[in-house]
Image (tube, rainbow, N blue to C red; front, top):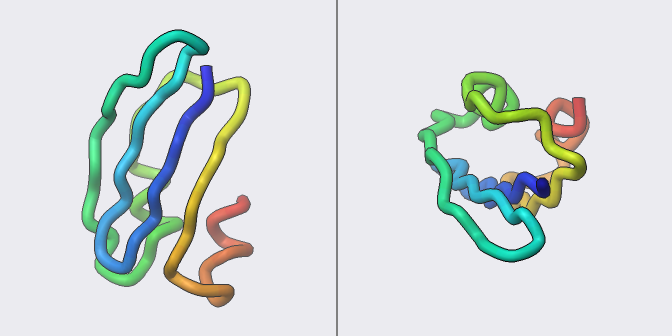
Length: 65
């Protein structure tokens, strides 16, 4: 399963892809701290994570962790 993340300026949207179908997951507002908000999302351990991030390089290292 692949966890898909769309990390926007105010929200993180999620979805999962199992190789056959796409399933929308929860979204959360991040209030300027996307890494903190990402930690609150409960998800089964994925085989991979694909992310798009428009919050800029200041958040990239925290998000990678």
